[in-house]
Length: 310
Image (cartoon, rainbow, N blue to C red; front, side, top):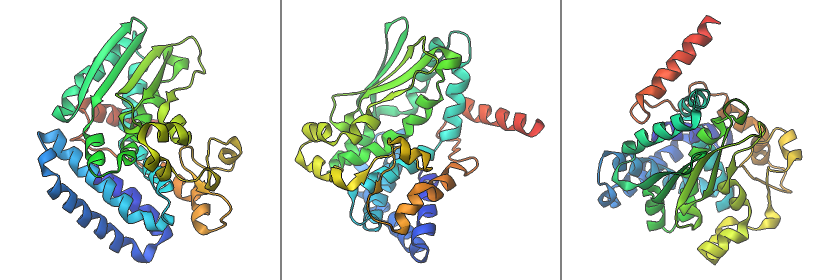
């Protein structure tokens, strides 16, 4: 996963600062190694070892890219969220698309999530519940990622890791499964737990609900929970344009990524579509066999074979 994440960072640097790409990537790697050495006591098993590696790369990337975003911490986080969203996107989308098309899809998703719990290890404390027959919930009361970034006074940078979960939530199509996904609370935003749920719905157009998308834009709510320093981190409302604005989306911009208003520079133009489309169009993004269940790899292979025979 760290390698795929750095690939996305490298693509941005090739566009924005090509003469410094090698220098900055080396700086990210060196800083990440320092962080891993300093926080080695967080490692309690193999999954937490892998989690420390990607966490260190994310924090190091945040530190190194911050000057390229003119010190705007919020925009830097939003960009890193986008890059993380491409990692392992294809196999997880395939998995949940397939599960949601089967008979009794809610039960299949429930069983699959429970079977994946060992992949997380002791760095996470999670529970799985069926409070009602038509609702499946997963709750996380301890998260390795949140613990790591909080140790470095960078709790909101945890949301870069949270961006990954959008992949499977979006893959559940209510029009074919009668299900929708939601994420209603996050440790990274100051809540007591992360809550994910998959629910039955009669609305074929029901959209997944994501508190990260809603509250990362609503700066005041997060500031109330995490303190004034978090409000400072989220930046000035007058300075950021959010791409939940449909006019921005018509122009080809990507949701979840902000651009600076009133600054007609090349960086703003790249966020209008060129840079982000390059990420979207990268084939086979983020397939890491050792991090994903074998079934995900098998599903991806089957999908590729079907594509070749069309």
